Amino acid sequence: MTVADTATLHDAAAPAPALPSFGAELFLGRLRTDLLTLPPGDPRRLGVAEEQFLAGLREFCENEADGGLIEREDRIPDRVIEGLKDIGAFCIKIPREYGGLGLSGLCYLRALMIVNTVHSALGELLAAHQAIGLPQPVMLFGTEEQKRAFLPRCVREISAFTLTEADIGNDPYRMHSTAVADRASGTYTLNGVKLWATNGVIADLLVVMALVPASDHGPGGMTAFVVEGDAAGVTVEHRSSFLGLRGLENGVIRLHEVVVPAGNRIGGEGKGLEAALAAQGTGRLSLPAVCAAAAKWSLKIAREWAGARVQWGRPIGEHDAVAGKLSFIAATAFALEAMVEVSGRRADLGGNDTGMEAELAKLFASEQAWLVADELVQLRGGRGYETAESAAARGERGVPAEQLLRDLRIGRIFDGSSEVLRTFLAQDVIEQHRSADRPVQAEDGMDQPAAAADDEESLAGHLRFADRAARRLAGLLARAADRTDAELGDCQRYLGRIVDIGSELYAMSASCAYAEALTGHGDAPARLADAFCAQARRRVAELFERLADNTDARDRVVARQVLDDHYAWLEEGVVDASVDGPWIAEPKPGPAAGPNLRRTVRADTANR
Image: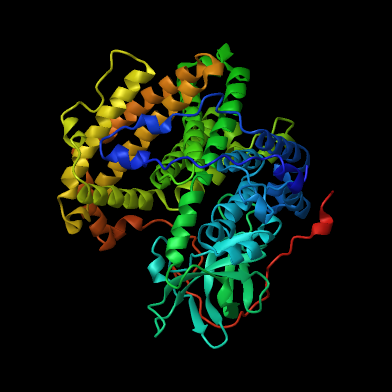
């Protein structure tokens, strides 16, 4: 099925009225579970066009994409990339009027789940293009002229987003790339070096963030530009390699005297960070979808292996130590799918404030999926540590469990590290408490036991627990809001625990809402939601306990002493195998000194 064939099948739904943020309400002490209610019918079923697209994508992945080949060769074959273009995988959310499929964001998330279980590089290829690449900022901030110029190209051309530099982690204000305007010619000249640009090695179009100097025309500031991947002065200087994600086309891109028309500027001068954050916010659910897919695959492998592997006279899944792992994997897989389904549907309604839910989902999913993968490796034992290729060479089934562990590790780092997300979310909710009228609910639950046992072990009982915990959180945040920013500066871990409690409560609420909607699956969804909530409640109890009883102050003292070389003697007796060089290599401006490593995806290699 072609892009055009699929696009004709979809009828867009009318936008619904805007709803408040579940996350914002949660941290104000109001557990608005009504905001998570799913529409009538089977929530796992999408529209006809979407189901047909996903079926075609699954068929393509099963027959044409070889994850083992990608892993061995560290490259996605051109024919696979072209085949994905043919079925519309690069333009799932692009409106039909601009040549795309015009399908829902939830359909896009499910597509990521399919391709990512073939190989993680496929998921990153599509997500980097559609989550933060050119389509998102143009759809959000582009003019109609820009939409008609660039969105049709994004149907088959690959885009990349370039923000990070050698001295930029989560602090974009340290940016060195510049864009100097020539008002007479109506152009900007860009100079700079961008690090870790996913898709950058094969990108046809780049979204480049650069600083416009202040002038008589305005204060300048960080600004977003569309740059042709093969423009004069654009050089891919290095293709990066990582712990996992083999096949990822991620690299270092140098821009030297690159002239860009003013019409390629997305939004106004100084509005680039706003565009970047908005695109990142709407695309942040991509990672929870990838994590949910990983957990679902882990459940399949764990179930099959735990039933087949026999030790001491019975399958290992019947041993108590392994049973705990199976329960954790199954319950967490259900919760992650619930967060994706509930959050994705809310985002698709349009106009809703879902940014905080997406951040909570990203934080929770990336942390829990890593634990799921670690438990899968442990459950598989030596076979979990062995590569799939090695196992297959011995004549056994090749299961890439160790690859999953390596690939998922990046989730806790990129798209906002867990530590940074906790800090930013804490800042947001504290400002929310400072600016809003203090709700009555903020004080109601202050003295409730954090993990009070509920006589009724039911979904309703779990939600009552979540409601009490949310009100207690609101009280703690109200107290924190009375402190100065300087006083809160040394409370990052304390506030991070509050955010982690909020993410657990959101996962619990989404799981209950999802289970209640899955009426066609008997009581199985409710049992999984109950298992997850029971596990989450104990994690919440521990987090509440650690708010009052922790080693934070002592740890800060030890950390200061480490930095002051008090314990350098402890490092003696080892060899540092690191390669010599500076900790951060700030590239020098100027023309490229080496070859352009940019790779062109060849359409003629596709097996049509």
